[in-house]
Image (cartoon, rainbow, N blue to C red; front, side):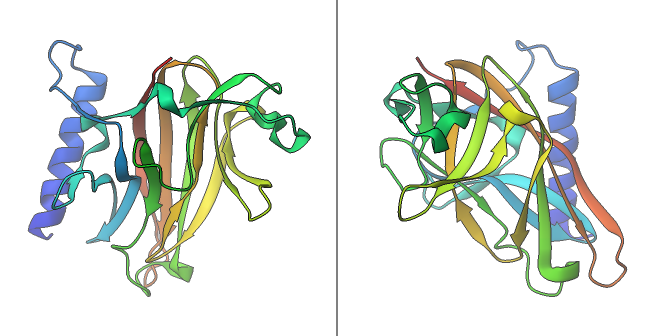
Length: 217
C-alpha cells in the first residue's frame, strides 16, 4: 500500500467517525468554499481502492480535501428564477426562485466540477467510472444538468423525479455542470462511486460519500 493511499484511508476513516459519531461541537471546523474552481468530486484509484476527494483550486497551489472537511456555500448571488420554458420544469414553476452554480465560470461563485484526471487509461474496465447520486437531504430538490449551445438542458441528476441517478465518466476526464437548489438552507448529497478493475474485473466502490451545501437566501 502506498503512503498516499494509506493517508487517504486514514483520513477517510476519520471523516466517517466525524460524520457518524462526533457532535457538532466536537467536529473539526470545516473549510467553507464559496467561489473559485473546485472539483466537488475528484476520484483517484490506487492499490485497488477508489477514493473520492474534493480538489480545491481556490488556493494556490491546489489541495485535496476530505469531503467531510468541506462546506460548499452557494451564495445569494446564485439566486435566479426558473425560466418560462417547459424544458426547465424540473427546476420548479416558472418564476420560482432557484439557486444555480453555473456550468460556465462566474468568478463570484463556485465553479463546481467532477474530475477523474488522476485515473489513467487501462486502470479500470472500459476506462469508466460510475458516479451515483443516491440520496438528497435538505429543504428542496437538487438537480445537476448541462446546457447545449441553444440553451436546452440535459439532466444528469434530479432528486425531484426519484433517485438514484448515475453518470458514467471516462478515466482522465473533467466535467462541469449547473448545480441547482430549489430552496435556501442546508443540504447533504450522498454519492457513491464505482468501477471495475481492468485486470481482475472486481467491483470497487468508494462507499457512501456525503457532500454538504449551504444555500444562502
